[in-house]
Each structure stands twice: as C-alpha cells, then as structure tokens.
Image (cartoon, rainbow, N blue to C red; front, top):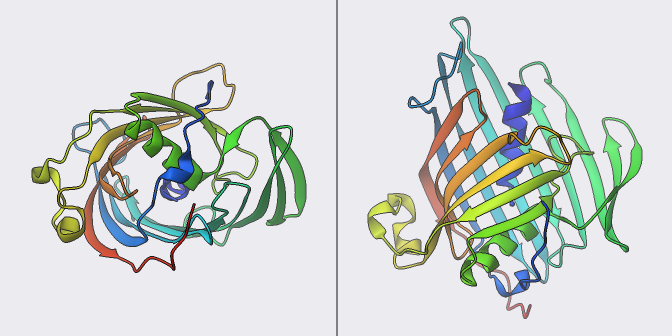
Length: 273
C-alpha cells in the first residue's frame, strides 16, 4: 500500500520511441489545486473496504526560472480494522529545459514512517541521467537512455496533443518512489474539447473556454517482461497544464479524484522560452 501511495504523489508532481515536439512551446499555469480521493466502487478492491483522502498539488515558476512542484497525498485505507493513515509529500525543482532536477520525498505513517528520499539529478550526453542520492543513504549512479523528467513529460504530452497526436511514448523519471526507477510510459490522448459541463466548479473562472484533452497514461516497469502497467492515470488535461478530474488505477484497486479547490497563482516575470 505504501508503494502505491508514494507512486501517486510522485506522479502528480508526466517508452519506446521519442518525439521531437518542442515542449518549450507549452506555457504551464502556476496554480494550487486539491483533489478529494475516494475508492472507485466500480472496480473490485479485494480486502480493501474503504480508502479516501486528498491530493494537494502546487506548481510555480516557468521555463526561465525552472518549475517548483509540491505534491502531498493524504490517505486513509481500511481492511476492516483500524484505518492505515499515511501522508506522502514530494517537493521538487526542475530546470525549465529538463537539464537538472532535484527532489525530497517524505513519508509519514505506515511501514515507511519517517522515510526520506532526496536526490539531485543531472542530464548527461550521450543520453543519460546522473543521480546523486543524499537520503536515506549516499549513492551515485547513472540511468542510461533518453529519459524525461516529470514536468518535461507533461509539456511533451501537451505538445503532442496540440499537434494532433493520439499517442505519446517516453521514458520518465521522478525518483520519489524509488531513486533508481525509470518508467516506460504510454500516453493515449483523446480529442480536444471545450465542453464546460465537465468543468470543475472551483476552476470555472480560470478554465472556462479552454481546451482540454482526455489523457490516459500507463506506467510500466522499465524493460520488464510483464507488460502489465504498474499503474494507470486517467485525467482531463487542460492546455495550460491544469488537471481536472482524475483516476488512478493500481490494478488491485482504483482511486477517483474530484477537484475540491483551485487557485491560479500570479505568473513570474516575463519569460521568453
């Protein structure tokens, strides 16, 4: 269960072929949003009787200053006894060009109570990421391949959507669930829409009339023989990077998230990407 919660928090903070679409052409809106989580009753959940909580997400910055994201997922899961309560928080900064990335992920509650994961990541040539872990223990290693960082991945998916693409594949690293882990991802992008009947009330003033895309991203263990995804995220993705309603399917159970609050933040000074 702890692994699943950490994966979700990290992800809210973006395979086999790569697109040359210019991610820098996408402008992300600085904002805060809260999503209320509940167990998806339409999917069997085994011994898990109930699960609820919330995800709090904030993104600030731009392509010039880099992007700072803070994601916190609070969850309470019950299998008939005392609920397991856990909070997983990921704080990250990512260079606007996707050249460097650093993060600190902390867990409170559950088997990993007090766990901290911290690392600094630099892109190298030929394509690879050099990862320097400082917590919980010092380690340095190289992840080979053309690998995207989290915000870079979001911008690439949006660029693919704007170009009319329906599929986008990429290797993605966020490190907050496991500093050595890279996911193969497959994004399926639906047709653009401006349907305001699906617009969450808290964001209505900001998002009314904006284009969004139904997006489903499957996350696979890199190079694994079993091509069953570790988890799948489905959500409405607006052209400024805001996520509307969402669903996270872990296979054994699924969570749905409804936007409960939203605040657009003032953008930084003018940035020419």
